[in-house]
Image 1 (spheres, rainbow, N blue to C red):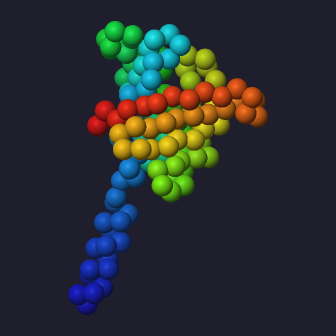
Image 2 (image 1 turned 90 degrees about the vertical axis):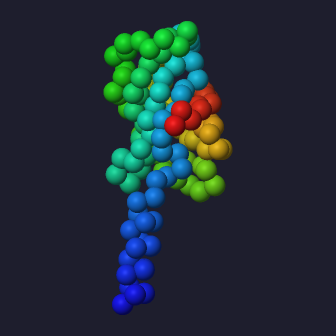
Length: 129
């Protein structure tokens, strides 16, 4: 009986463990000098990220019609800090990129391509919390 309870506790703890990429991330400034905070969290079986705050080039919080919109979706963990199979939307160019991410400590390299890989873009995000 003790072994069954211990096994059940391990299963529950494992299911509740957060993915290492979950949290609040500061984006690199875009073409307009603006940046944002993106909250990455589970969305069903994948991960998604929503813009929760926007800032101008001086770091002053600004109103943005993009706050509350998904920036990242359908990302899946591939192991060793790699994530793929998802999409990233860049509000400054209004383009959606087939994307991947690579987590390294408190840095997240986000990259993606459109038009079959002809146009690519990358951005380094830093963990806020």
